[in-house]
Length: 303
Ligand code: GDP
Image 1: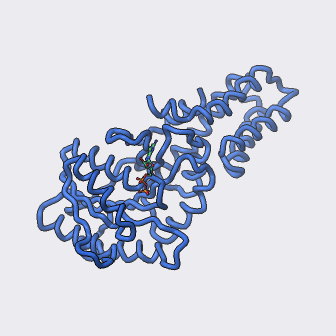
Image 2: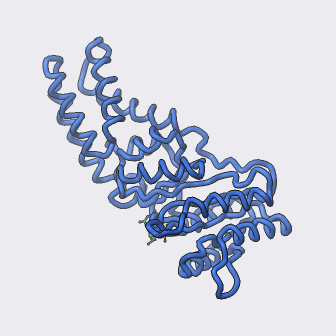
Image 3: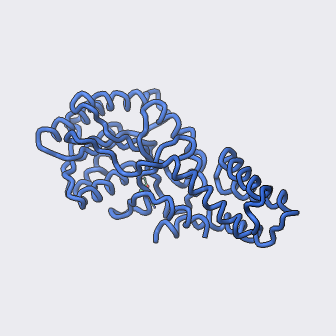
């Protein structure tokens, strides 16, 4: 399983816990919990989640509910699982009943937006969904070329900006959704740009895109999925917060979980934003996008 191989770094970090708990006895609770805290912090859980977990374990140890190292380990796993599950409900796509449903994919460049869009198109097509892609990253010419490759690879139709002149992203998306409506597509998958550090406001562009598609189909976009690079660790948090505050994110796609992904930050980002992880990217191929499974995730980080 690719997810299982991906979290090797996190798993190695967390493996220390087994050793700690092996020699646990009540008199050593403080020392063991201090070390556990250290391990969780090193595994990118972030201070807020780490304190939540350690405090809850301490309470259960002191009240006599947890009596052995292995009970503590199980409680730790359950605590992480509960944290993820309580905030990551509705992991399935919510596409409404109007056609076409519109899914916007957003995130900073390099995170895996275009690749995830292509993989999502492949998944949906296999479920019999009629897909139209929209090349909404009109800033980078290479971005639409890349999306066209994915359209070809997945046998999808695509709308790209015509001509040499810079076309607004919102007008490409609006055009695509119109075509989707006229030609009976089920879902329009919209790529967007992800450039930061320019004097141009990405967030304003995304708001304009959102409005433009909503004018064509009421209730659209049905999903705005934020793509986050799983290898960036807790650095993804402020970025995710900004996208969410401005655009309103409905789900997360965590990419590159096949690499040296930071497992703990998954818990932090879900807890902080209260947004479900809908998919995880586990490679660069068409089939490497999977629905998020909280149980499998927790099993993967705690061996
Ligand atoms: P964008 O700029 O956000 O559209 O990012 P791209 O889709 O172009 O992806 C950036 C790089 O990350 C590309 O080389 C992708 O092949 C790679 N990539 C995307 N998702 C994954 C993933 O889940 N696993 C791995 N290993 N690589 C990925």
